[in-house]
Image (cartoon, rainbow, N blue to C red; front, side, top):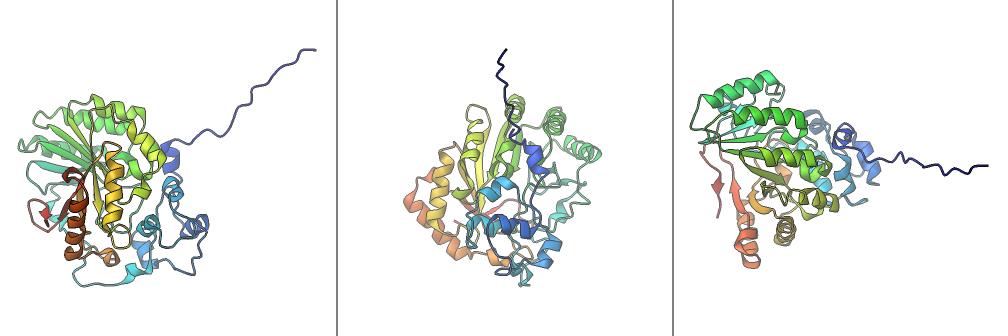
Length: 338
């Protein structure tokens, strides 16, 4: 009799980023069930959900502390009934971006740079998002829209930098991103490619070796601006995947939004800066939240923001203190508050 040892093949293969992206949590009850919370304690805003549906990837949910309504990560994604409050000075387009939209999917607001919508969707719907009312249906990028944007950029040699945004530009496939970068490389006056993305934080599996190679091999100077608001977001998985960029030519920056009940505390921001630099990421901007309808509960006064920043200056070296800024309609650059 011949004894054979059969190799057991595990079916627990980790899901790739696209599989995780296709399984986003969109049901408030499901989210709260995972977090062991009762929806009757804090009902969701039906108005908010209609305007800006719930959307959270499972890796981000896993970083939220169960049973805690005050968790700073949960506050960023839960559609609270506070969104129903109508506040003076808040509007659907506080930055008047529609005035700077020369072709679908392109914003030309600042000198020497344009913002190109690479994707009309995100991996997460942050409730404070300044584009929660943006007309993505009219600006949902197709290849023909990209070609129109590319033609616009070609015709303006003053443009030196393209900022890929969205939505979230890393929500598109490597193949789509490679095509877009290749087309941009054919425009001789472009020098810098900047990518703004929350995905490295909320869906770290997206930071694949293929993506790293793509960013490393382009002729552009590459800047990746990740969006993290709290050190709790930077899990071991996030650290592991961002560490893959350490040896690349990609310059890593972070921008945060100063949010009431999330990170409006100097010690929270100090810990975030210290965590970021351990990953070779420099704190770049700390934004006052834009006055978007449905987000007034996140507002922090400029006086409090300046006090927080001064506390950071007292405790951290200058390179770990982000620039405190706000966007103002019609201005040719962000306004620094300090």
